[in-house]
Image 1 (cartoon, rainbow, N blue to C red):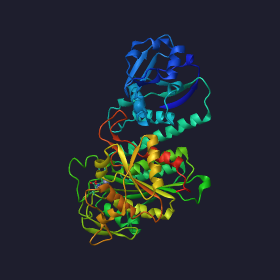
Image 2: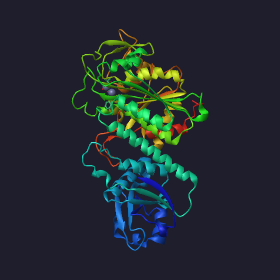
Image 3: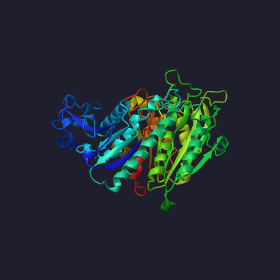
Image 4: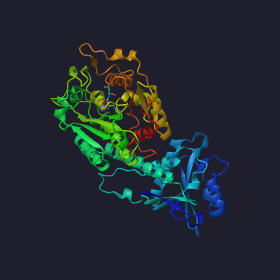
Length: 501
Ligand code: BES
Ligand code: ZN
Ligand code: ZN
């Protein structure tokens, strides 16, 4: 699907359908829609379909006309104006494009006038990302791929006046975000026999080649030899080879500057290991690399958008399997930091590979660190499926994450990492144990990670266990991986001032 800008008076618009929006229970139509009807499309204002349309969020109606270059209007409900925000807009746009596919519209016209009265920052970006998100589907393994047939070929932004350069830049940026998100969703949706650590490393290598990133990887032996005993404990029972993947992006004039380091949990399948998960809790665990996948999607967007700061991605990838060689509960390992860990539950594996990645990140002298991980089921219990938790050692980082997320429709809520929680991780035999009590489980995981964050580096840990994965299709998109985190990371890079943290 391509996005174009077409400068033409309304009388010359051509498309299989043009999109307009309407709020629910509004006395008046949005101004651009009213003006267009009055001056160019009286057939719309007289249509009973228009009179019948209520404007409920995500509902659509098609108004047919003849004798004009535009023969269909797809009117899209935005819900009540007082409840309106970026999530509502995204949901409405996603639903609109699903309708376009259903009705096999090849070209979709989007008059800029349709956006008048929609008070949202970056509304064109939201539009493009939501359109791409709404049409996303994963049918690689379906023999019958009829799904793609109705996909619109082109979306035309229609304007009577020449648009400033930054408009097309905003559209290109939005497409990069949409593509990065779709890529993350693909990686998460790929089954664990395909998207294993070696596969992810090859993807990273290809991407590095395409965009000029630096790529490095560590294999099993090197991870062990480097002393990453916590990471190594996770893949002791694995047949699939583990990888530590490293991607480095640096704009030309930023060499020598301290980077933003992003770390992602890449557990390509989490059985729980010897602390095996029961049926009902194991089936979706290919999603356990969603943190690493979000960082790969983010890097793809970075390659296109080229933000003005150095960024390093560190992705510890392995699967967590039960085997005769697997780590047993009760074992003690030495982490890369030198701290010893008593592993009492092998299903708390995410923190084990992350703690070594976090400690290892010190060699990049990070200005700030953000990690993304599907880390705890307790987080889903606390915040539900649609909200991620943020835990940190820096109020600035916390607010940056929450505000960046809010502005792009990804919700984060802060949980505390007070020292009193450290009690929970005291071990009888080692420096730390890898689990605390069930109550406060998300925080205990955060407290554990905090122990390994390089001294005095501002850090935020994002537990995305809920929103990274959707069990069922919703109006916002299909079931499976959601790509959660990619947009927040992109947004964050534009707001982050590495010298002021
Ligand atoms: N990958 C899981 C967390 C998870 C659960 C992600 C549900 C997505 C959806 C993680 O490795 C895990 O199993 N955590 C344990 C920790 C516990 C043993 C302290 C959990 O949440 O039960
Ligand atoms: Zn686990
Ligand atoms: Zn896990």
